[in-house]
Length: 229
Length: 403
Image (cartoon, rainbow over the protein chains, first blue to last red):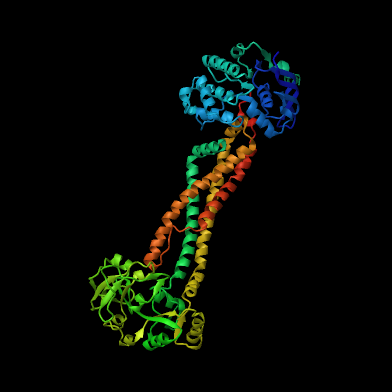
């Protein structure tokens, strides 16, 4: 049986609204993801999916609750340790790719590994080869098509040999063909590198490719609270 | 490695502001090093010039004017002294050598100085440095109308051995005041890198008896250059008392270096103003680094957020900003040496042409370490405010959009 990679319990996060009132965004009693497991969370825009991923990645600190990744309690760590854990354990794919515009494809991928295991030029080149951009190593993001930019983002997310890849609406900015190919690439990349994948999306076509799809609203009680309020 | 990549990329992305701010640092650093070096070297060079003499005896007046006129061949002569005064000091048992000089004529603005051959044969203008005539020439014969040209004036006026010329009356060139006498160039002095290079030397008698000069001048000299015997400090002090305190007819400028130092003390305010200007330029240049890096922080918030999302720590981002500011200064200082390399040689050339005093523009000076170190440190300090802003960048907010 596969070991649990991500273990979340009693996770809460709220933001302060302009009127001073606390605005609950995430309230998840329990969530698990096994090593190498691929799972998708379905939810509409603004339901807290990104905040949930930010909490898992340690970019945000929860108000309460626990997030355990690969045996380490992310939520209990101080910020530098969270940064370190993120740099070594997690790969992140954003909806808008978030490539650094002043850096070439190769440099973008190298940055994906530089804060964790350190730069490995050979591996970075291999990853770009794998996503079909071996001939675009020294191109800048602005010189690439949208689909190619997403592929660079996929290569960067795998660059630090992560145990967990978080993908936030990775097909949101792509056409159907590119979306399908990109998603396939993400899943293959994760499989080849032994990484688990947690994808959040509202794109039904993308979600249809996953065997394990859960409604975010079903696990996030904050959504129900808001609806109730 | 990552840090340098971040710094290099950021400098490239903001190439225009990087270049402009680096140039302002270059100007500040170049000016600072130039002012400092010129001030230090000029002071040392001027104080080191004595043409091998310890003192100058001349007419009653300013010691500084006397030294400038007789050693540096600048300024007007404060007046003449009798031949008897020369004989008197020459016989003083504490005096090793007394050489009379006479001034009053020029050749296209370059001074003619009358003296005796002893000036060239018995004096070391600097330790181990004796005047010598270039091959093919000879010293003048004191009884003839002959001349030996300093190296600088010979090159400027294209004088060579065998050339003849008519001197002009006065220390300032006026073509209407040409003397009838014809002088023959018998030799060109080897370069001494002293004010003697800017002078045409003729026999003392030539100047004393030049047609049109006051007949009284035949029994007078403009000044007497005095070399004291070894250990002559006490003698110098006694002669200072005798001529300056007890007598009221003559001036004994001793020691020469101290008299020149007084000149630099008098114009010290000028150095300080120049230094102050350099410091102000340095402050403004540093402020321009602060402004350009700080202003770029708004457009870089997203980039910082992405780097943080990739695992970069806050302190990595802070270090990158500080290093970037310091690097702008460092690049500026590299160009600053180029600014220095333009300013100081030009000033050195002008100084040599005007005074005959030579400074070495490329001689090492401590300011060449302090100025770059200071400006790079100031550059790094200019990065503190932008670094604080970078430190505070909220990652999640700048990774928009949210889903």
